[in-house]
Length: 214
View (cartoon, rainbow, N blue to C red):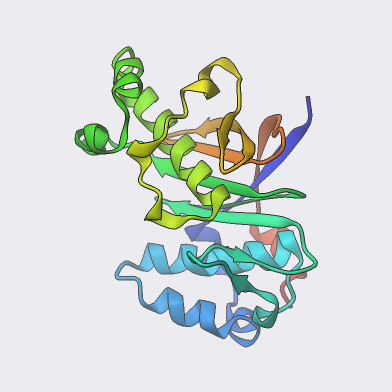
């Protein structure tokens, strides 16, 4: 089974980096980061720029475009997608349409289940509330992001239950395939228009980044 890397950078790592190189290459990304209320979210937004440069190979912001609902892409580069939550920003890439989502596991979100899950999904979730809530959440988010529809596609209007049996979901004339993983306190998923295989978490650290970001 093919392994798909999930590249991750922490807010702590971003904080330790000299960000002047990114200010030169991705000034709009830096302005976007300043709009966040909390420092950690600002750092993770900047982390997304670092991942695009280091992992995808994007040289500067002029190469980045956005789809109708804001999904970033870069002509001539592999498909990629970003997500951040808590302490982490992650990126997956592939030669297909792809979406990724990471969520910090927090019981307070359970109350949202009835607003975003179908009756069958709610029934499946009830056997293990917290674990399955976030399994469904990250599956749905990563699929929506792979489709590039943004929240114009409401999560309750489709089901991802075929994923639990290893079957794809068929939407918009294509088959969509999932993979999921977890680290302490987080669940993450990737969804793509080609089989994904298993996921491998790869954390980028200071030593990985210093020279490549100059």
